Amino acid sequence: MRVYEAIVKALESVYVDAAFGGGENGTGLMVALKHSSKIRSVIVRHEQAASCITCGYAIYSTSLVGSAFDFSRASRTSHVLAMSSKK
Image (cartoon, rainbow, N blue to C red; front, side, top):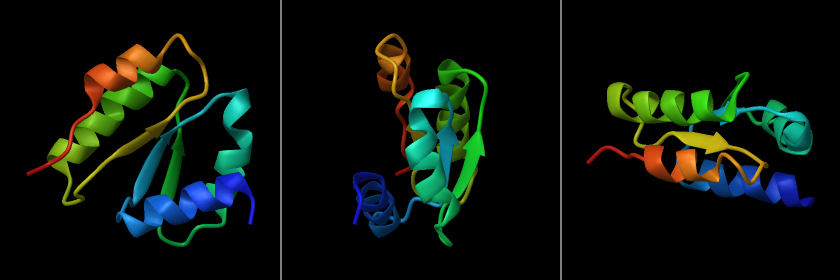
């Protein structure tokens, strides 16, 4: 099992049903998500957009959690600021 496949299995085990992200460094994870029957991957143009979409998805959908992925250092702060889950 490859690292990205293990990440997808871990996301599936916590009932993530959608993952938002993109970028050239995340292609391995996007390919692994493509083969998942439980997680829908949504490619976005900017990492900050992934953070905002994930937050909105977690708040307004019936899902318990939203997931965003990113591989650049610059946008990690925006991910931390936008983390959200329903209670």
